[in-house]
Amino acid sequence: MPKTWFVALAALSKSATPRRVLLNATADHVVVLPGRPTAKRTP
Picture (cartoon, rainbow, N blue to C red):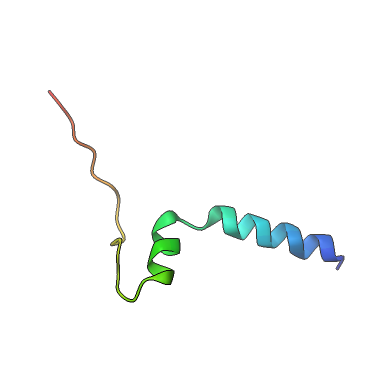
């Protein structure tokens, strides 16, 4: 496979990585728990 194929896959994987995973990967403990964010709803 051409080198550009691997470069494209690397770019896609970086853009598809959730912010939670990026923050937790560099921390020494879990910073952001998995789950859906809760939205505050006003009546």
